[in-house]
Image (cartoon, rainbow, N blue to C red; front, side, top):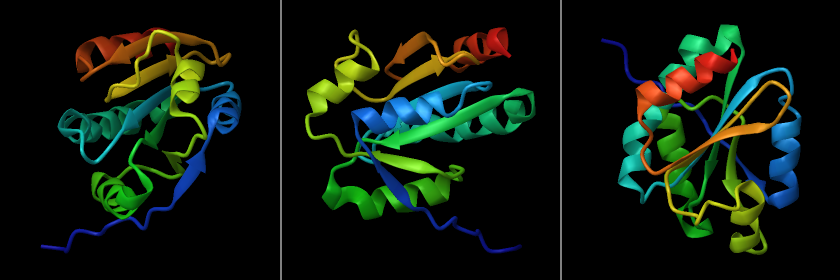
Length: 147
């Protein structure tokens, strides 16, 4: 049996303006943005399914953007988890000057609780928000409707 290869992961700091640029740069693709953290058990549980969903639908235009909400002192654990989960780069880590403003800029209905996922259409318009652990069948159906 071959040893498990871990991806070397770099977490790119992201603030409110950076978030908007990342989403805008994906125009032409269906984008699923997932906020997660290593201390969030449901986040760690759902990540393999999100990575698998992207792998299954990438050729049709799905792009997964993952953003860690871990604190700076947890960054090493976040990198390790991202590598173990097989999250494709680029991967991001939230580094906002004001977390509340960041959260509000993503979705005014979001209170910042994790996990949270946001689905954008090919024009970069947010079409659905998922708060808490996502129902994977519902998520896949929403993604496929946009592909």
